[in-house]
Length: 408
Image: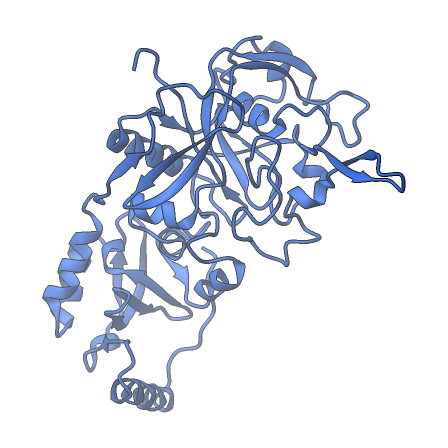
């Protein structure tokens, strides 16, 4: 397990900690911490809901966040009440002065999240032009989708493209059905509305290689890395992303899912052929004689993309770079985006010409677009990568598509 070292608490530290907590209480701070004298003096084996076990002593409980701190012989951990196996929840309740509130909080975490979904127009009716927008509201918060019409495009990259990889074999693909794609990555706000969890909750539950335990100081890094309603969600696995789509599908009655790799690249390119979805800009002005003149320039790839040289060492809020020609933001960089396809390095060589859905077998899922610490060349329209279905980290998020259902 990746952990944070912390020396055992001395009596002097306990006196200092008590003084700080007393000050917070008397000053009206919104932090409610209780502990029982001697509760942390007995080491015991703790078990988490995922089956992991470790030895440690109870330290305290933070009612504001419903978290418990456990001190092992060398390290300190922090967990939610709901992370523990039932037998340990009962033990924790026996230590607290407010067992009912802790129990209720733990039980509420296990209940399905209630949310409502409405749409300004029927998403089962195809759009009329590329980039047309329709809006879905979740608990009154609006999220816009862009229409990607049926069409044929060249997927992959030509061999003479700078930074071309041999698994980006150029091939023609036809998408026989159009689809609506979220104009940005799924934000932390949308994730919380549907799941009830924040990025900090995901870190606490699923810190890579740690399981249900996380380092106490690690949570502070999230604030620097990118935390807020308008930031993309991350620390999400492919499995959880598909569960999110299933929950939104059930509530909305729509076919919500991750894009196929072909849908993703088609939406990313938005009719362009180069390494990036750069577009032409026409500037019309009058010359000295009053005649109109037109100057055509290309947008700079950097204007579309958050990458290692401009991301300020962290994830950035969505929709702060320029959109592509269909009004879709952040397809290049910020967080890499999961696709529904199983990954095969050689898939392009055998891919069907119409509506490809990825390899039939494989142990990885496709992700596209590069991330905030990628070099620009890895954020190209054709760049493709892979991760296991349970992989989660600060470089990977997702966006969703709505596929119109025929006859609806």
